[in-house]
Length: 262
Image (cartoon, rainbow, N blue to C red):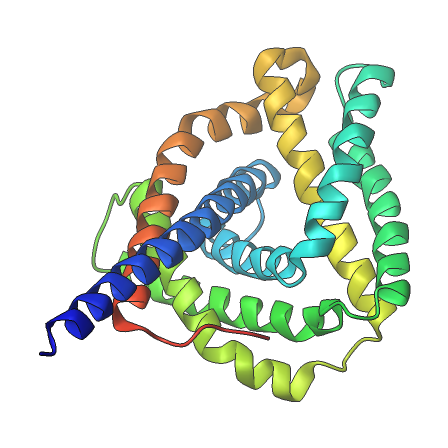
């Protein structure tokens, strides 16, 4: 008598697991790209800290920032993409990456601020709290990496991403309700929109820089070592991020944990 109900329950769980797996896999892709970009830049600038530790914190922070308002993120991608392309066409080579990032950040700041003012139904006003949650999740996951790295040596970046991506995501999902409850009014909507606009603009421009430099290395100029490191490590890191994030999403769907609607 209860067989149909049981079949529907199993079907629902499988569908839920596949949907969440796809969403988390996309987040894993985004995380892996951010992670590798930050590792390469930290190595190039010889920052006085473990590059993987810094990359884990920054990837968690910027990932949460981008994810905090997907409507604005999509809008910014549509605007910054042609801006970046025109910049590469008009600017002299090699490209000054810092000036490129500054240029698109100004555009992103203006568009994001306007969005924060006029898009009254948007949740961009919670970007401050979600970004803080991403920072905290990234910091804890990176701390976990440091502890594990003292026990295990010579771990590949793809394995590190496969571990840190779902760990950061799980910590973020666990902490973000509390952060939204207590810290969603640190900035006015114009400030939240500006912050998201700058973050998305920088990520899109950096992605175009890597893509175009991969076609013609003259674009990278003195940053050719950064480009080479990204080219060598990104494919496997992306696979690690997709697998790690996707499996975590599938597990979340099978366990039927609640959706975050914040």
